[in-house]
View 1 (tube, rainbow, N blue to C red):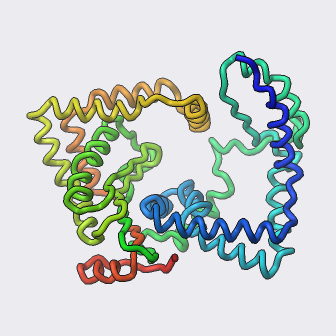
View 2: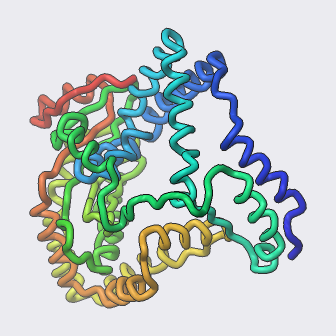
View 3: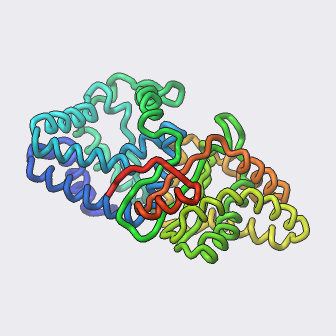
Length: 369
């Protein structure tokens, strides 16, 4: 393959955006903030399950708290405050924007914190090498600059600040977020594994079985929701139940609470039905082995590099997945039943929350849209 003809222009645009973007247009910033506010409000109403999950996860782990702060429900409040500041105290906001850019481009440190990730065929990468080197020479900073702290070994400064904020900003409590909607997005989650505990590959099979079986049947088919599913993060041990465009609220929480007993029973049934167990394993490994586009392959490789995930670790996880046993369903069910500090996050209407409270499912309410 031939190198892209306009790669030099692309890098030129990158440099322009990075170093010369005009931040001093108040009208443009106000326009962008208004667009962001409208987009977030619409997204929370239409994809509430994603925001409920982000909110749940933020209560338990620092990276997830930071993610929620930069793109979750609380980010909408931040955008509203920034819009007010842009309209009423523009010089202060402009100074903050310029400070962010100055920190990113700090000549002393920016090279050590910089990562350039490019995906392409070898012939293409060889062909753009000179343009890459030219781009790196033109942007700020020197290769001989100071080294940042090794954040694989020491906590980033944001960690202490985030931990101090979490108890106040994202307390482990049941929350309801009121929006204008005819449906509910019902989430419940908590911790299945503590830090340092080993997560087994079989957990992926059990989670997938729960999502495609019990939750599909009880939340979607019988409950009438457009979607019912669960998520599990092997990185930090967080597990969550979620529903999408759900006509129910309290009943769905009851379905979540009965999931561990359903899994326990499934473990017993699978002892007698090896074909069903094999189907569960095949379905899960099929999801893992989906064909990826070149950009997806590149991003996946980049993620693995950031996480320092080795091929040996992935093979171990895969072997555990392929060797899933009925007893693994029982083990997961026990963890689910003993979920640590579970909590609820629901996005719905005021009337739905009132009905849920009458059914014994009360939560702290926050008006969003």
